[in-house]
Picture 1 (cartoon, helix red, strand yellow):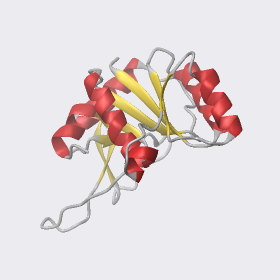
Picture 2 (cartoon, rainbow, N blue to C red):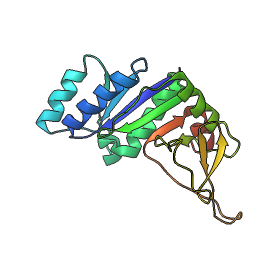
Picture 3 (cartoon, helix red, strand yellow):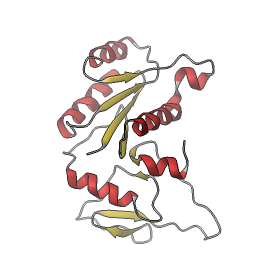
Length: 182
């Protein structure tokens, strides 16, 4: 699998520990990079230091402007996508430090997400939430676009461009750079 996982963190060390534990249980063979946004809280700094022996940690780069110095979530997401591209990852999973993975991520899941991102009118981001097989998709909101793939139906008039943004989910790295670049 060409998957790289990024966890975005700021001053919530206990949450970060839980997130990392869930990743080691359910996605053990993918690299994990922690994008710390300059945590200053003692417990967070201690946990970051402990995790640094097993995981890559990216912290603020000391730039002159506020976004460069703190990174900010979207600044760090841009930085993460550049790292994913440089390392040749096909998918990047973006998580916040208060999220957990609750089941094993299998090769079939990877293939399904890659298939979803290759749909002609698909976005570069596939949401990390899911509908269970027992639930039915509201057909005014979703259509079945493939095996285990629900695609949001856009209700905007055809002369309007629909724009949406997600801060978490699976990002198709090359499609991201083709569609918006940052």
